Image (tube, rainbow, N blue to C red):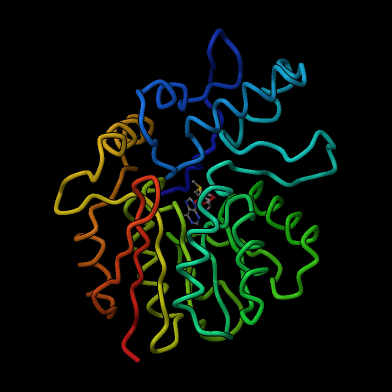
Length: 281
Ligand SMILES: C[S@@+](CC[C@H](N)C(=O)[O-])C[C@H]1O[C@@H](n2cnc3c(N)ncnc32)[C@H](O)[C@@H]1O
């Protein structure tokens, strides 16, 4: 199945503009904590609108945001390729706390679907004994990751790699086995094949005892864990029928077949889960 970006421009936006934001509907879906599982969140939407008004950039917003909805540029400087996603700023510390308690003090960590690159920079700064290998299938995301890495001045982040988990990705990343694979907010914004490829590749590239870390919204026993997740799931599926919030038990079945132990599951803010699958040591 060909890769389809979560940030592909929509053919036509509101009022004929070229910056259609499906998150408009999510933003209006009601009160309560919205899921952070995509960059298409209420915050992202308001952030974009506030930016547009505050800086009187209304016309230029289309150029900035059409290809990468919800992720906005860090600055007006066209040479600054860094994107930011408001959800990353909110979830990076809770995720870092989970990783700090469970990853080894040293080793190599592969991040799949690095997105803007904010996470890898934050994690690398907080876990200086580890070396991080960021990656993404999307070229614009890789530009942003590279720019974040340069601006961070950290020496424990490798150059970002192109990696599509629906391909034979285990062979695409240089070097030997890795100690952990991180994948945050991807499996519901990609076809099921991406989840299958992620788990299969991770099982082949991880050391014995290595960890596959997933973060995002999940169904449990066939049911959504919050009404806002159900709304979010409906929007995802309307956008692309092959996307959607995955059931943890189905993901676990795939992981078990690939050789992983039963997962450790940690409830996270905004109706998300951290799910850690470990290979037998
Ligand atoms: C919602 S963003 C999440 C990005 C980042 N992990 C975060 O939490 O901010 C989803 C990411 O998944 C990536 N992605 C989608 N399909 C992919 C695939 N088949 N292989 C690798 N990355 C993929 C997209 O390019 C995008 O960066």
